[in-house]
Image (tube, rainbow, N blue to C red; front, side):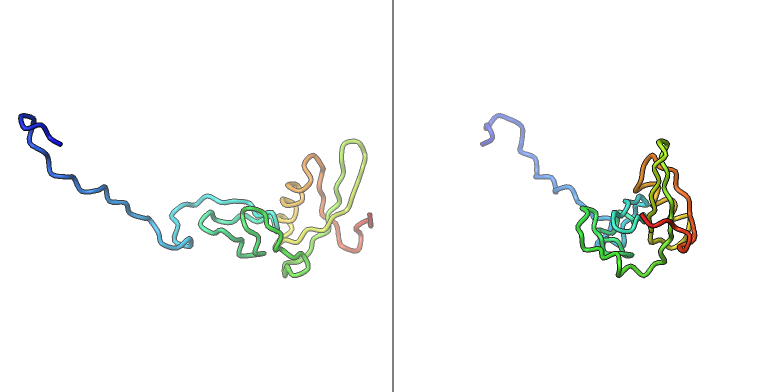
Length: 121
């Protein structure tokens, strides 16, 4: 309660207007990305689920490797101690496959090989 000799009460100010910049995730104005664990592609942060494989940011396991329509690229991995291994990476292009393999196997040297020449480990 206002004291009778105090200043006159002020009219209540309108609440601060809050505007959303977008209403759907596809309309987000940001250009940053997150890396999909399922297919190793970069996805805009406006999307919660990767459009390529269906994996979400939290890493759920809904991605099925055999259902991925992208071509498979054979890679050979080698470590400084002399160990080697073979892997197959699904990616749209060979450079994307190399990038994904390097992300999957930190510290290993990665090289593309023909699928027929890949060693069976």
